[in-house]
Amino acid sequence: MDTSKVSSLEELKDLDMDFINDIGWAKVMWDSLQACLKKSFLNWVDTVLTMSQNEDDVKEWRSTFMEQFEDRCYELVTDIRELHEQVLVNIEKYLNKTQVLCKMLQADMPVIGQHKLGLYQEQFQLKRQMRELEQMVEARMSEVNQLRSKQLELCKNLGREPILIKDHPLPSLNEISDLKKHIEQLEQETFDRLEKFTTVKGELIEIINLLGYTPSTQFELAVITGEESDFKITEENMESLDLFLYNMKKELNNVKEEIYQLRTKIEQLWNMLDVDFVEREEFRKKYVGDSLNTLEALRLELKRCESLKRANIKVFVDRLRQELVDIWKLCHCSESVRYEFRFFDSDTYTEDLLELHEVQLKKWKIYAEENKDIIALLNKHHTLWDKMIELEQNATGADRYNNRGGKLLKEEKERNLLSKQIPKIEANLLDLAERYQLRHGVPFLTFGNTIESYINNLHANRENAKKLKLSARKLQKEATAINPSTSHMTSKRILTDCPSADPKKYKLTPRKVFTEPKKNPKQLQVPKILLTTLSKSKRLSVERKKRLDKIRRLSRQKEMRDSSTYIEFQNDLSNRVDLRSTMNVALDNETVVKETFKSPARQSGRTPKSVGKKSPNLPNKLTAVKSQIKLIF
Picture 1 (cartoon, rainbow, N blue to C red):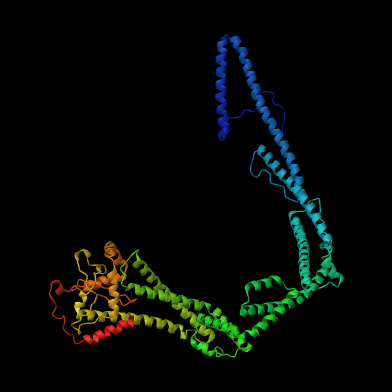
Picture 2 (tube, rainbow, N blue to C red):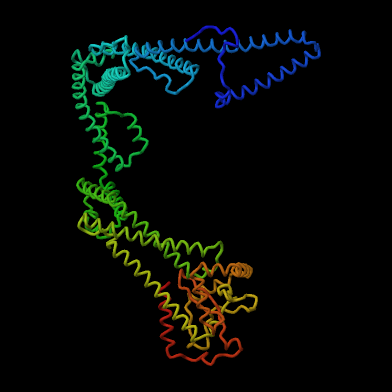
């Protein structure tokens, strides 16, 4: 490169302004220079004019201005050219240094100029890469020295020859990785052997202390009493250590097995003898572990408990029999199971009888554990079924319209949920019962019945109860229609039982509740349970009735949509156009719902002709009513 000094602006190259058209910063700079030059020049001229307008004077000043301007422009060009020369020198130096470092690292030279940067930027790029390579060399040399030292130490401990590591050039990355793996293997092997020795030594010391064993050979003494650092972790020594541990463990296992059996027997005897828990805990704390002293103490305790057991066999047999009763109930066993175990009622109290009961109890405990899923599902089904029956009874109870707190809606939702849950549980029960039969060859029984029979009986009893209630209600209505005078015998009318009644339109005087006619023995006799139940309603306060009436009037529309019971009640009223209200006997939970009624004859003040006349079917119907009511209650 030509480094000759340019002496004046005239010697500089003449360049066209077009070459800076695509250089944004140059155009901005040129515009700025023009503005600065224009401003400074005009101010200079203005100042000159204020001093003199003589052409001779201005000529000298003008010459000075141009010389200084040209010198400054020349200096600017010279400075940037010197910087250009220095950048070239630096690039060459960095390239040489980078080449040396790459050889040491056994790495390829970085590619120069691939990003098409300027010389100044390439200089900084090369410098940064050179610094990185220098750091890599320094780090690799340090790593190699550490690996070399570590390998020498490990190989010395294990008695092996180390792998040779070169310094010039430094090991490559692959070689470093292989060396690290080799050292890791040496470290792992050393660590494993030391850890094994420490663990085995601890186990051996514990076993020896428990058994009271005394080391007899030099090797055993070195292992038990020597320092870990003095023990040579050679392969032969490690094999001998394994054999020593095996023999000691075998001896200890024999002692442990005997101690375990003794503890199990003693715990069973303690439970049978009902030994105080404090005494048990004191014994456990005193004799812990698997030492020979503990073994001897357990033997003595077992002997003592066996003596007490022989002296109290009857107590133990009775206790086992109670446990058998409980486990039979848990397993849904019928009475026939007890009869099958013919020793249950034996009064010959011997050790054989006690053992027979223990075997029987163990058998049923195993049965309960194996069939815990089906037993739990049966219990859940029983609970949900009872809840469903209770809700159905509530749906026909006397206070079913006392919808305080949205009770009807809650019960309806609960009934819907149960109607979905119970069929699923029953399907699962039948599936489990089928699997049980396939597995054992006999059906699973719940209190003497198969699960299928149990479920069918529940549903049959439920349907029979519903039909019986409907039949009893129908007979009661017929009896009331035969002798309507009994409908006048009521206490204060509970108009709230009839959603269509308005309590403000009625003003009734109290009358005796279902008073039996004394002069006409042929008149219908009302069962005493109806008299008792209806008389209880007399105690309802007027204030409570008014409050309930108000609540029901406000929520009647919502309740008639939410409760199927309300819908049935409304349909029944709409169909019986000849009645102002009806009397329904809800034979559920020993409760009677009282609802008074008015016939057209009563509204006009006339007495129906049929009143007092004997119906030919009255005795039979009355007898049927009484018998059905008795069956229900």
